[in-house]
Length: 269
Ligand SMILES: [Zn+2]
Image (tube, rainbow, N blue to C red):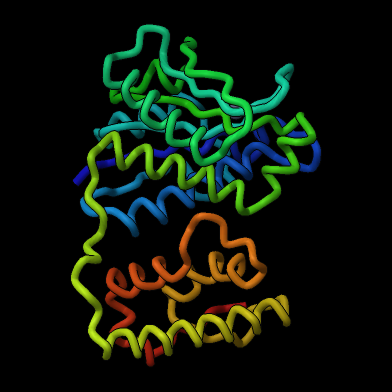
């Protein structure tokens, strides 16, 4: 089982860069949670550990201390840029980076820029705490500039966040040589029927939520709640490169609870 450490930059009292209505800490968190979701759903034998999964403040030394103590195999620190650039993506390794860190940077950088497009500011080396103090191969990604209006506009689109997440996920999977979650085995028609039913449940619930803008008195299985975020984008025509149906299938296979999906979980408002 590989351990991937994802470090969402900033948080809590430290918003990171703030401009054009975009907070770096929010983008970093959204991307980090998305990477965990997709990497664990789509690939076998990988666990994603997070510096933070909520909007909390953490010292840099605590982030690397935790990742080192967990003996993570790789570390990726997620940030957005600001201050003097004209926009685009760049990545950083340590100035005396190991061969594996260089390989990790090269693999992720290519994967992310391929998904994201726009200006490629290059693979850079800098004496940054996160890449210096991490014992495992480590890189830091600067995902667009919050203080460049065009980049900030992109960061407000879920299709762009999707591309950033996908780029990281595919890069990490390539670097670690992860195998995709088994999907060769065809689904039985019985399972397909059940999935169609479940899809209809999620769809009607998603529509209901969208209409009511509240989850009061909502009932749906846990897995459906997590799938809802993707489904929301599907309904509004902003699916991006991520395939909701695939998520549904993967969730179905992974989630034991689904077997008892009739015992629906009450979601508190
Ligand atoms: Zn930052």
